[in-house]
Image (tube, rainbow, N blue to C red):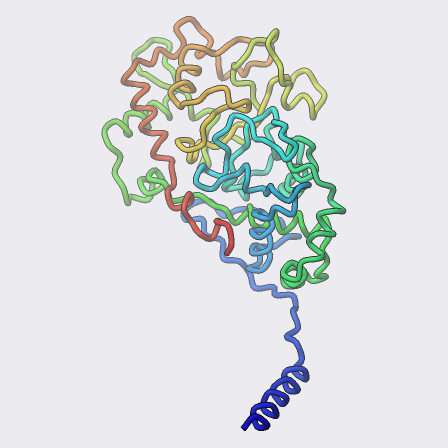
Length: 356
């Protein structure tokens, strides 16, 4: 009996050793991007979304090997339940140092085409993807070390082969994979989206807030308007421009924003206009996280904007004595409307979450 068992085991081992391993190859299966009633995005032709490319990008987004001490990932400062932002005013890097700007949200990046980061220093999303890895205040790692660490991982060796024709673990493919995953993160199922599609009804307060949001200020006082739509327009509630929104006067400019990139004083204290989608869950607010609540943000635009040489012309009524003259109920209604831009599905969608 023991001889039979031994022979059987021997044959199994021989057969297993003769079986060729499954060859991992490139898979070009397209990724089915879901975006509801949003306009069709203009995706880059040199980095088409594929199932395997998005999967690799998702793996990398949650991968701590990208940081110097292997403790931080992109997701450490871009947390899904918080709109892929950070509830801390400034994010803490691997060296225990803090950055000087609030972590930006990640969604609907495929509709954004005017530079990335608050100051627009990255022309494309793929350019943005590699900068936090190398930033001394963030992940503080050298790309050559990232390549080496990933090249020692069988799962990454295989996944890069599935995601790219050349299968190479290099800086370009790392950035393209991260770009694909971030492009796949889309928010389009808020209550307001459902309202626009005729599938939901706004409350009286939300409707009054909507009217305030989309109405210009009337100097005669006959019609109330909050002027929000000038800067927060379109399906993604942003004009995608760099603007000075009256946070400080010239003497108190501590961060020159866009001017650091363009090297022109005309851009002093100008920052990218963020989307207002999911604004309810992405506190604190502004490039420096100075406002902890949306109530503070509304108060700023209503009565506390500051004049400066680069303050946008659209703030002309905000800057006048008395500001926009929104009363307590107006502010509550405006806040109610802003909360209709929250997308619970996006905040809990497991396809955006950490892979098992």
